Length: 126
Ligand SMILES: [Zn+2]
Image (tube, rainbow, N blue to C red):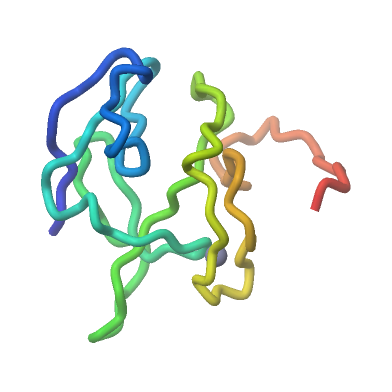
């Protein structure tokens, strides 16, 4: 399917200003400015695709005919070394998912099944 490919920029400040909203984090201090059509994929809080380690877009579940392919822009894994959120990435989400986060304005940590030493999180931030 789609694939992210383009120049890799090690310093976020060097990402061109008009590409700030398209740049994706591909590793610690590694940003890619995608030049492939994947750059136009929209966000959903309940996406049907994700970007794998090879920067291929892969589906997470069956996608109906006519359904838009979406990825999550704000998802992160707690083990990653994350840069500070840039307010220019923030937007009001209208994805319509039942779990829609509304305002996308921070990294979102997936409640993944990967870590079996997971602690109970009881923050009332939501
Ligand atoms: Zn949403």
